[in-house]
Amino acid sequence: MKLALISLAKDDLDGQGPIALLPLFAGTLLDLQIQAAQRFGCEKFIFLCPVTHGALLQKIDAMKQQGLDAEYVRSPSDLVQYASEQDHIVYIADGIIPNEEIVSQLSGAPQELLFTVLHAEEYQEFERIDLNQRWLGIVSLNAARLVAMIDIPDEWEIGSALLRTAVQADCPRAIISDRRMGAGAISHIQSALSATQYTRRKLKEMPAEKDNFLNRFLLRPLIKSSLPRLWSRRAAPQYLQIFALVAGLSGIGLAAFGYAIAALALLFFGSAAQFARTTMRQFDGVAKFRDWTAIALDLVVASGVAILLVQASDAVTLMPNIVIFALLLAHLLLLRSAPGPVRFALTRPDMRLVLLLLLVAAIFGPISYGIYAAALYSGLSLLLDRFPAGKLPDSSSRQSE
Figure 1: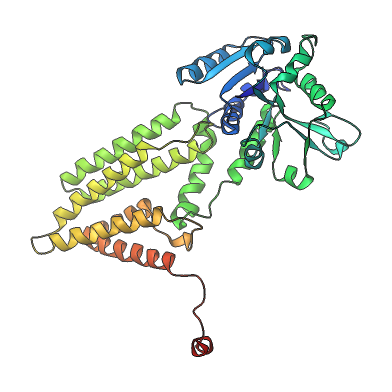
Figure 2: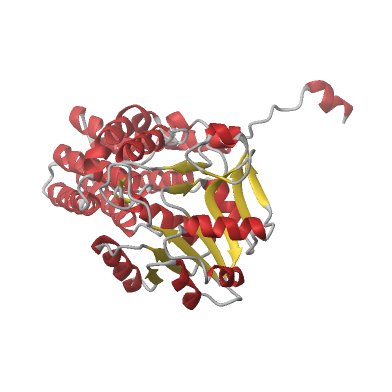
């Protein structure tokens, strides 16, 4: 069994408490370390904290309520009682956050590995191993090696003790290049200032290549500028969830009474709130799972638009309009589920862009015109997305055949 050993032994540079409890995104740095450990494949979580902190105890209780196995110890000598010789330990030092590449490297079969970096003089915030290398705060070891640490004094840092054990055992070293370090292979947070810098860097790195023009140039910049304020309110994701659902249901109510413009505006704002919530969840340090709120909101939006379309149709146009609306929904589902790289992402329609198009149509005329335009637009986008990117064979090649 893989065990995660996460250190809360060091306080931040401002002396406000353990580095791992620094606020980061919608939670703490510890949340991201736990998420990384889960993706390593760890089944048990041990927190080393010489001084008891209420926030850590609350976190352990919350993890146990979720069915996770979590404990905390005060000293290195207490570790032996939680690990058998058949177990494997992955240690994460104070303030260390690995990137996707490191996580993938440790998520396979258990292996002993010591992560280091060359050019020791350039990385003085990390612990020195020898003249040329420094340790990057992550080590993967067989739990049987903990026996060698029983006699280590309690005042020793667990990281230094594990490092000495790994070096004496000649554990293989994974040397991280300067290029990978510059790309954020290992992030080392030591203070509230470095946590803020890490947050800004991650916001800057948010992927936008799959966004259409509405998301890329309007919604995502607004959300990115609002995220720091949203993260300062722990209940912000729940508020966004409630607003999205209430706006969607209110939109259905207004649609039932024939208020097309107000209904579509509420549906659009509800969808935008859900987009903001989804963006927040990219950084919340929680294992990803199916978002039922997004699915429910999609159904609510489809229902609201269907009501408006039925009201705008007469006996002759009702059935054709329903067929065109069904085609529109099918186009959106196919575009959303398309595998592989996204072609023509900047113009690819989604629910929010379609709602905006329908809102403009409702302002200047019947909503059915917007349905026709959206169905044609999404159909062309789907055709371009599915059309082969390669060039057609020329005439000479066809003649040779």
